[in-house]
Picture 1 (cartoon, helix red, strand yellow):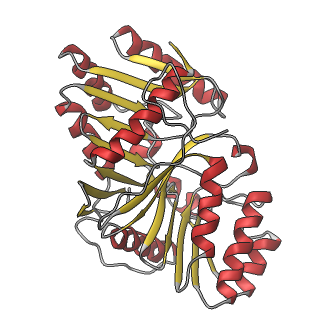
Picture 2 (cartoon, helix red, strand yellow; picture 1 turned 135 degrees about the horizontal axis):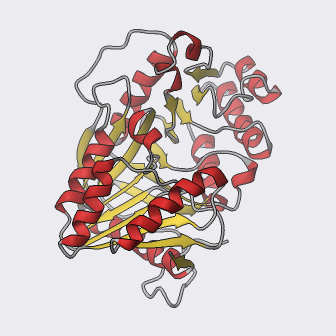
Amino acid sequence: MVEMSCTNPEIPQATPIAPVPAGPSQWQIFHYNETIWPAVLELCDGARTSLAIEQYIFAADIIGTRLMDVLTKAARRGVHVRLLVDAFGSAELARSPAGAAFRQAGGELVRYNPLSRLLRNPISGMHRLHRKSVIADGRRMMAGGACYSDRMADWRDTMVRIEGPIVPAALAAFETAWAYANGISARRSRSQSAEATCGAGHWNYLTSDPVRPARQQIYQALLSRLRDAETSIDLATPYLFPYRKIWSALTGARQRGVRVRLLLPAVSDHPAIDLVSQRFAAALARRGVEVHGYLPGMMHAKLAIIDDWSMVSSFNLDMLSIGLNVENGLATTSPAFRAVLADQYACDIATSRRF
């Protein structure tokens, strides 16, 4: 599979990964795990002082062990490496030989919200770390939707590599999650979002956290953009189980003449969830929303392109991401960034079937 970017959705063309613009913010978009994973390995291998990693699914398989080897080598050469994984999604990593070697080299591995907490508090025990981010030296980062598991090797996903003023905000959010996972009382800030004017567009680092003041930041930003949309809404999500307000915003946009498109996997990795997603998809289609099922394989990207605003995130359009998960997203009004996402989205639509 290759990185795709096409201006004509009828004629997909293989092109290099998105160019990196000059200016205070440099970014690069990756559209498939086949290129995302090597980019993550390269970012980690190039770290000189620190690595801060958040991940929901970090399997102890081939790709997981390969990445752990890179992290272990980094720790051995003196890099301060902290790995925060979800206790449910990455249950085997801490007990694996790769996890043990990482800790022996000086790396720090912490599990977020161990399942034992379910017994003490069933609600807070369900909170999951759903972010997927890598922050190197406090200056460079990758964020988006990709996990590390061999079964996902051929998945369609999206990650952004970015440098610039937005990165310290991501590190601050990591520090808060790290403190919580370690049982440290972190100072509650009013918001973990940050804004930075980077290059040609305005960038926001957004978080959602069920136990923080920024509880529904991504949800609120998305909802606001949907309600204010004037010309077009393009969304991608692997799982669809939206809150009523999201539903109303989508159908309301159609009623006022906005083109609304929604991209889902034709078949996801969770057949039971597909039953729910497809019912919502069919209902939205009856109300004028263009719903497309991605045919080449599993589509795991979480994207929003609304008028001149775009976002890549870990945030699914489902109840878990909205109400229970710790999430993050990179949002911008950069025309160049939007153009790259829109070209790839057109290619995805061209290889999908409409519901």
